[in-house]
Image: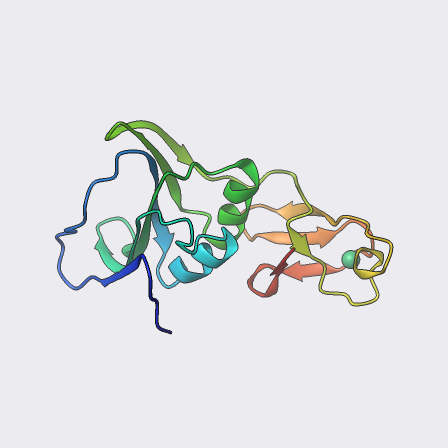
Length: 164
Ligand code: ZN
């Protein structure tokens, strides 16, 4: 995969993270190792608006061995974004930066249900029909990240979910 434009990919080997501090934006920390690019994709972070994006993959971490980190200038995560993050990488933390200061630190958490953002994997499901019914998924097990489509009852594998 090759990234161009304003996305800067830094593959970290050492423990020093030499990146510019951001004035306003979000730092998503403690992303599961190897999930950083999936998070970017899920959150639609692509740098097309010209914002500075810094991605660090495989950063040594005291807590979980290795982790991925994403810094995005001028973006503050919405609830849908936080829910996606909770599904992809439940240990992630969201740090909101304003005027170079950390003003809020959030842990992500799965809600009881997730509406709209994922597509049911059952092609026969009414949410995939021409009727344009929005998906509703019940979170059956927050730890194990088990989701179930409320319409067709299919148990969904969080690693194979497609985003709407
Ligand atoms: Zn379904």
